[in-house]
Image (cartoon, rainbow, N blue to C red; front, side):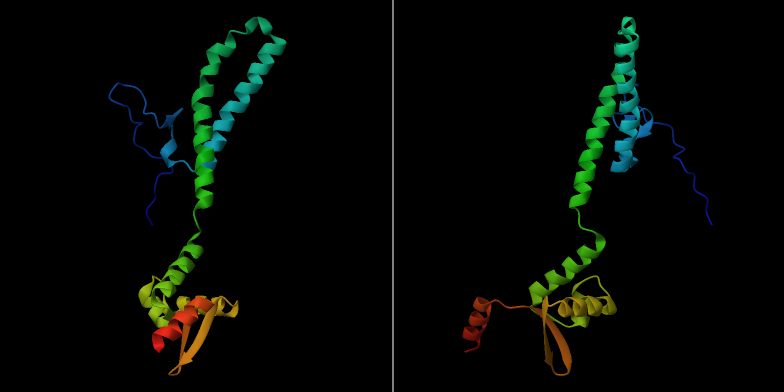
Length: 172
């Protein structure tokens, strides 16, 4: 078993001007952080700075200038907060892997009209057993129409009245 380091051992990147990259947030590589951890890291900076600013203004108002000394950290922390929230909203729009497999199966059904589990496995990345289970489940829930032909089960999408009429006209 290979042991991997918990942290990246490479030194932090510097831009060509000698400054830290814009993707670094107080030494953290933002690109490698999940949206939840981006929000948590930004709030870990914003909340103490906000509380400290309120304390300074209320209890030691003659030290108001400290807000300008430590207030600079608000800007990158706020940017990281916005980036994390945007990442959370984008990740909620992406379908889970199970839905992607079902979508792949339904798209194959739409292309071919009818499928057996073996044909579904050839058209998609599913195995025959996975396709069979998914097709049976969709049929049991009433989402698919099942036909028996030549001893085999053919699964298809339900036809609307206009599609059935059009198919009858094509057959004549």
